[in-house]
Image (cartoon, rainbow, N blue to C red; front, side, top):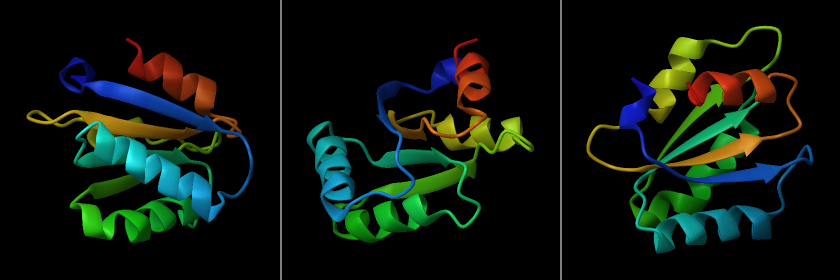
Length: 110
């Protein structure tokens, strides 16, 4: 299950939006770590963070997946799919300001 995913990093960011510098820092960090897959978990239903990271990482051969962790409707199958990579480690970005963050962290730590 989730044990197969190697979570090399979890970045917490509490604000509603990310500055371009924060996004670029995240991309450069994941590139430095040699990661090719990034899972973005946020409560933004329009996936703005995912789009920002996708645009910033397009020249670095990284795949970005996004999943909503809104406390009212967390799809744990999507969370698991976002984190599961069998051959490569996964970088994780979590919006700590979401109501479902604690529940998701409990789920993935099992």
